[in-house]
Image (cartoon, rainbow, N blue to C red; front, side, top):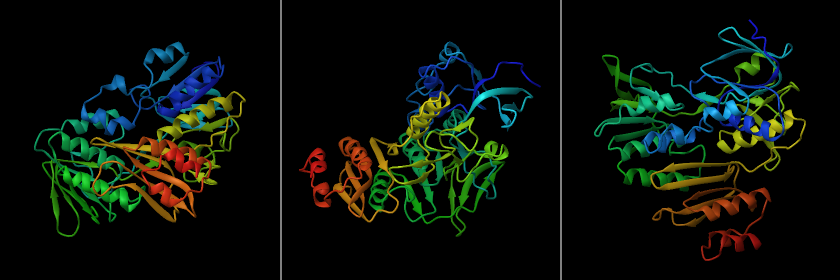
Length: 412
């Protein structure tokens, strides 16, 4: 059933990219109707703090929401929260919701983000087995935060280690189980993995690598242990699973939009349909700096694609082509990553990760800087972002020499 409303710009999704698009559309001079549809009850909020300060209880929702609800009203943006989109009709230029509404659009932005990758083993549905993706997930996990409780984290990636750090600081006994032979194996060099294993173990976290989880044990419907399949059961009061995310592309696929490891977009975030754009975790976009297509899971990517999409919907070309960057907070450590290290031929360390809590690892490909992992080293991170964009060829010896300022390294 149609709402009978005027056609305007419709945004599916209520995350970082969606909120940024609303801000940017108004900044670009768009005066028409905007409708933002999200399946959660809350207005758009930041996800990165959920596994950090929000989980720790150090900040409330007011510190993670991107804009207060009043902003959207003032921006003439209708918020349709707790609402799921069931279909996109690209030919009719309408969006159908699961409660029977049909919403017309002139331009459509798909910013559906991603969802957690679930673990499909016996006992997966026991009470106490959690994932962390939403505000509601955090509240569920916090209900177990009692000193002396036992937590098993399945997955030694960013989310898993951030949860482990927060839980440990709350007096919880933590065990991290990782399938690979080291933590953060998908995103950093072994030097950085070894450093974080040292830090977590020093804090009292048990880290077990090379472990495959084959099931969850339970009693009275509640999880009591994690089965590794080799006869070892890790006892627990609750579990947090962090084994990756999956882009939400089903709506695009069903609408006939090209999808290949994400919704395929051009540098203006336009999909295979000229009236439909996409931004954020759900997209696969071209990156001129690395000369290949990427699907990124980062705030920076969502924000910048939101800006580009808004401009493109207004007929303005502002191509998105930037160095990707990411960060992770664990204990008093800030890991900042710029670039993409896949395919590097040399790793150069600046500092002493085996003893100190601040250092950087630079990744070179045939002498050209392609990425950096910087722990409590903002100058190395900031300078590297510029150098990566410039395809700078650097002297490894000068990079490693801490007596040489990063700006001076760049001049060589």
